[in-house]
Amino acid sequence: MNELKPRICPECWKEFTPRNSMQKCDSISCAIAYAKKKQEQKDKREAVAATREKRRNLRERKIALKKRSDWVADVQREFNKFIRLRDADMPCISCGEKNPPMLHGGQWDCGHFLSVGHAPELRFEELNAHKQCKSCNGGAGHYAHKNKTVSQKYRENLIQKIGLPKVEWLEGPHEPKKYTIDQLKELLVLYRSKQREINKQLRAQIEQGE
Image (tube, rainbow, N blue to C red; front, side, top):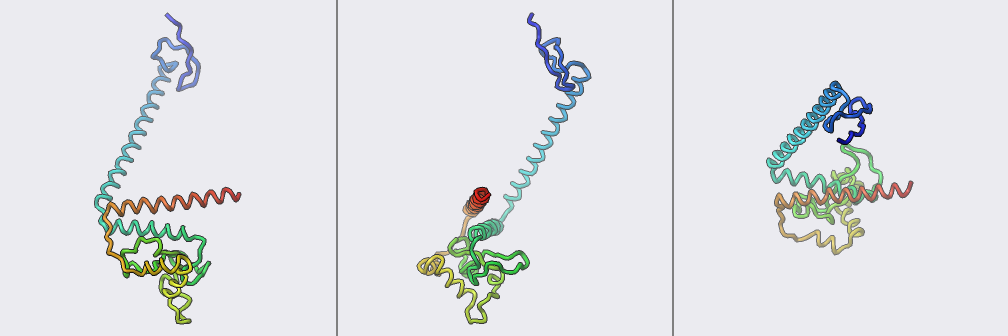
């Protein structure tokens, strides 16, 4: 019979020579304590797994109850975040302000050239949305006293940014568009992915500058 090699007790960390190949600890007290610890770890893992499963089921139930309008709102939120990130280094598309005052909700909005109410089919058209200060997006603007509305100045600056043909295309006409829930889910993934890509590029630029 081959002599068993010494082992390290996983409980007290002392070296011992086991009496048989099944012996893991150097004493009964260590074996009891070790078994208790392993059971506690197992219980903890199962509790964590149960909590995660509960949360997953809750998310799935919430998703199942979501209406199309809820999905539209979700996509709109992520689309708006993307536009603000995309245009982060640009001034307000209407007034050209680079550092507007901080208003309720921040300084910047995603401003649509043709409003969602006027052209709902262009709600998620990237050419139709640009970074805009809250004052201009709210309708006040810096050009009212010069008899130039915010939308007029938006159009002028947009022509400089993307060109007249694209602006005229935006002005229509367009076919009505009603996204399905599956299409909205795809858009949600798309704009979250685009945000991550921009943030990744920004981090790389910061690291290169260090």
